[in-house]
Image (tube, rainbow, N blue to C red):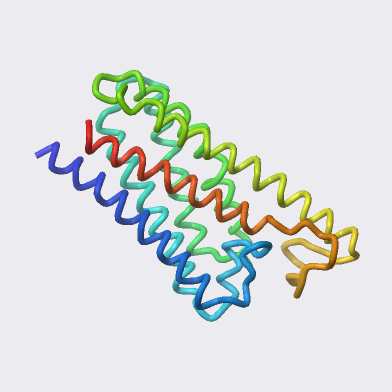
Length: 217
């Protein structure tokens, strides 16, 4: 019965992650006014298909929750337990991202809960499980996927800094209380949106990687 429950959680992790990606993919076709190179994923909430971006965040959070419950069933030390709790908190942040859109005062809090926590969690859990019986065969793919999360976070931070600096140099004010620029001035390196989407894919990939690995162990 326990294995059946765990298998269900693993499948839910994968299914919800796929639905999250599909929601985001569809938004790129139905909300073409938001250029993916420099508009953030959260900004889709400002368009005509808010339900899709809400679905994206909700499914992402549910995928994280499912993996949290799955991993809690196999925790065997304090660090592992703390990491799983932080993973659950990351899921809370993702759900909050769907409930509190980009214009809401709590959207920044959702980011804090959902984004910075996962890379550390992914590394701790992947290295811990990578040395466990059965999991060791899948050690390197798990670790590579875990490292991709923090690399994508650093890449997004760098891309955003460069993009905002370019806008500022062009005399365009940017910030949570400022309207989004209508275009990218010549000379501005605007790749923050791509970096944002890369982060999402890396985070979701790690969730799926852990769930599929569990099903193979």
